[in-house]
Length: 115
Length: 113
Image 1 (cartoon, chains in turn brown, green):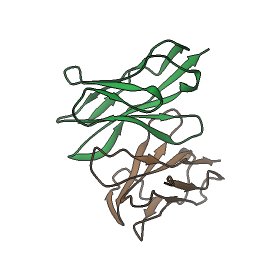
Image 2: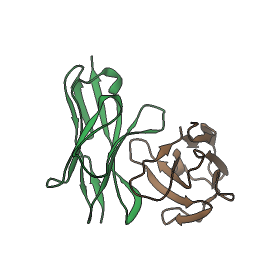
Image 3: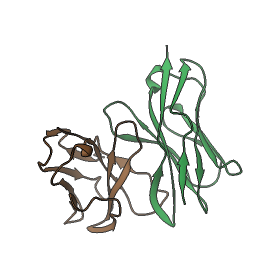
């Protein structure tokens, strides 16, 4: 089966510019996650969707970050305007449902560099 | 509050020797425990998980992990390390009451030829 797809793989922007990332989860997976991973650290959950509804966005900096999953399949994460500290890898993951015993499947990530 | 600790930032092992990457956790109820691996410039890959039952769990690439409830540990092990095992390893925990993963900070595993 196809894995989680993400694009672009790399993005370089200047501070105060905007950027968008796209994720297509594994077919049939209802739950989708966006994580931010700073180099050398564990992933930090930004937002979690169940189908097209938000389950948790408590750690999403809502003044600059937004995410949507309108049709319950693919998702976009946007940053506007970007700050230097947003430089990180943005990972998308999906899982079959909300059960805690399900492993998450990750995409390759988008490496964002903000100059 | 739930938490995961990986006490070693880096573990160095000679090729062919056994390896152990440590993980301890803190949860209020029964945990679901996971190990993920991240190779350079790659996304995270699932290695293995403990849900219930046998305390010794076997996973991908010859890795295994032992769940120890009394010590609240879930250490990752492999009998004979390969240079290709060099990567960043993350331990994570979740529960049915909180289906989000709580992640450890990661341990860099370096296998030397």
